[in-house]
Amino acid sequence: MAISLITEVLLLDGFPTTALLDTGSSVDLIRPDVVQSRGMPTKKELRVLRGFNGSLEDVSRSVEANVMMNGYDVKITALIVPNLPYEMIIGLSTLQKLGYELTRKHRNELQTSLPPVSSSMAKEDPDPSLPSSLPPAKITPIEFELSPASPQVKSKPYRLSRDKHIWAQDKINEMLTRGIIRPSESKYASPCVIVPKADGSFRLCQDYRAINKFTDLDPFPFPCIDDVISNLGGCKVFSKIDLKDGFHQMPLSEKSKRFTAFVLPFGHYEFNRLPFGWKNSPSKFQRIMVTVLGDLLDDPCIWVYIDDIVVGGRTLEDCELKTRTVVERLKRFNLTINEKKSVFHQTQVKFLGRTIDGNTKTTNQESVEKVKQMRRPSDLHSLRVFTGLTGHFRAFIKDYAKIVRPLDQLKSKGQEFIWSDEAEAAFQALKTAISSNPVLQLPDWKLEFELCTDASNYGCGAILYQRDPSKSKGQQLRVIGYYSHTFTKAECNFSVTDKEGLAVINAIKYFRTYLEGRRFTVHTDHQALSYILGIKEPKGRLGRWQVMLMGFDVLINHRSG
Image (cartoon, rainbow, N blue to C red; front, side, top):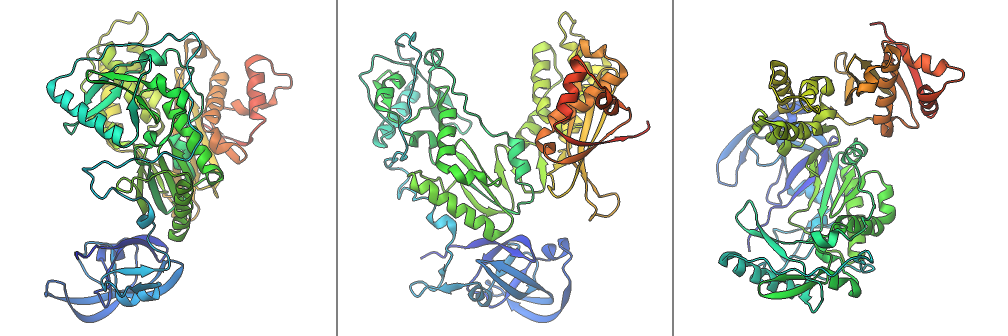
């Protein structure tokens, strides 16, 4: 029987650390880079270790540290050894102190009173080449509703190449076997397209455009990724849970199935489960997941976005407990987890294209690569594509609106497309700023926020930040985010005071999820806020601004400049 490596994330002097649990080792080992990066004090050792390949290794230094895992807190001495495959290796003696025992059946297998959470996550098919049925979730079946004016959608199947025809037959047989679809006698029939994937395989997509025209949009909301990342600030350990074929676990009501009917050259079928391509599928799925997780989502460190769930914990034990609670809730509703795509108890995870580590907010690397590879725009369409993509990074770039202004002017109605030196400078400046992989800090909710605003003739901007007094001078500033705005034609006619006031108002609105219910300071080089708040009987725009500011606990700091 092959020995399976067991790794866990433990807390070493309070820091999450990935360790190999090695019952064949009589000592604990640690890599020198881990020791150096954390400034751990070392002491002399005179040891000779024999490696698994029989080689001898001289060990001259060791560290003493506290290990927390499974609710145990154990003091260890770890030998410093280079070239370890993991940050640490935990030997048998320490494992026993942490509550692990060797099973009698297999001397190379571990058992603990708190088994690894991933062992109970999902039951993979014994043979992936033989598709098994995918049981439906225990939920109220979803209603697939069309407006009363909807005509019956009847389309002929699109023609397929020989290779796509063979692939589609195999795919349909698999979906029939798993109970996802069934043969149909519906009067509806939407066509299908088979789309090539990057890896050379195909994807079957139902073309529900005609159906979608007569479907009222479900307005159920999705979480904002920035809110997710901000609320996970301070977490040290994370799990990300992915549902296996999530849409296809959600049952449809019997009367709804006929609307999902689709045709291929060789048959007519309809869905038993929620299909892709229907415009309400994502929002219906989100609504169900919010209902399933219910009170668990009251925890600001648990979030769900369609079929992805992220769980954050302040400690390893905290993350383990929350993850188990989420998994048990999913099991209660018969939801199947994709263990291959799920990760548990990691120091960072990927969620919605972002890397979450509890300390910083980073850019989407795929989008960064797209920007780096984009060529100079040659027409209005390619310019709009470029500015549309770079706009996703505006929160990471100081004075974004000011930088992009020459490009925005090229998009003005009636403006001739002439690529000027100013446009080239703006294009290169944006590519440079984004390619540098800018990083923002996540908020520390124990610290006060400060907002610095400024306005020019053509736009305004702001920086939201915090000061951390525990850091050395020069490292105290924690930039949370940037805001920028190009003035409209009407706003360009505002007085200087009103422009500065607009900068403050817009910035507070933009960052309101951080500022509501908290005292914060606004730094401005103009007495705009004092002016707005001091008007006794404000009217119009100034009156609306004053009412808005009354809902915030704001201190004003007028800086000269």
